[in-house]
Length: 299
Image: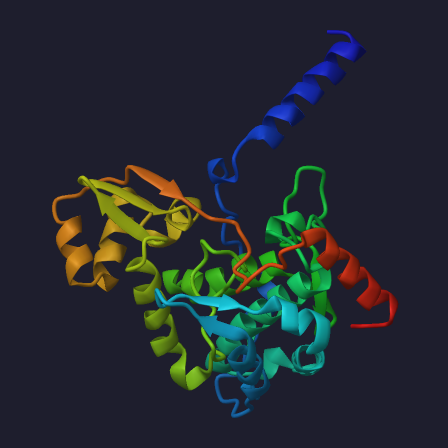
């Protein structure tokens, strides 16, 4: 094969990869980052997440169907300071000296706050996948970008979810707690995760998601689920049967009845549109307004 044939083959392969829908990709595996195993079971230190709760209460809006969306416009153009201050506090927190319960709340809240921050920094956008800042030619979105330094270690959103939360806690409900700023994602509730309420928060997230069509629905005996259950099937029993058993655990009466007798998943779906309360009608004008705001020193 000639040099140019190799180039042509590479271009063809790249084009085919880029053309593939994201649903065709498996999610990252849970691979432990050993550094973050360190914790102090006897620690009584706490982290104040009330500033994050205040931010969420001010910007998370419940919809008529019970789901929650986020008001990015207000926080992007006039209310960034509380978010920056909260993240500054988290950056300074000696997370390795905390107990496990405090660490769990810390990492979940950090993930969600960083996600909001990266959206705000690039707003207005139509999808988080439009923020192509991750390293690598074929990467998508912001998840691989090192966004913050904690205890001297540069950390990305992927690190938090797949190298810390998933491998350390091994709880499938983590997928209902970390929010990727998309319509298809589990809700970002108007309150921070706290050690005392973490279990209730995770159960609430599971029930809210599974019993909404985003999570699971049965039509004419065919089960359609969120692509989360495909991408991360290993966290849900590593089989269709495992996913269905998980759904049944949190299903309401109607969904539970609909799932009776179903043994396989027919299809999956995911909506990557931004989970915004609204997008400006004139998107180009909004882009110009954002650029002008940043040129004036807005941050």
